[in-house]
Image (cartoon, rainbow, N blue to C red; front, side, top):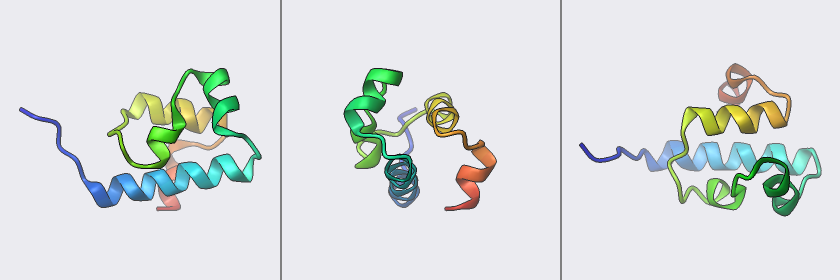
Length: 72
């Protein structure tokens, strides 16, 4: 079975992640050095990220998964 992609949801997640990063004044480069996650790919909705990756992103910005999704 292939990977299922919901492009609209991925775009909403991408915008939320970018918003959090900008709100905290963190560059993509700094985020990568801190987490080893290419957030640029996430922010452009190029990848279908895992819940585990999203959890790391949320922890980095001190936001629960529930809070993250409540803004979508």
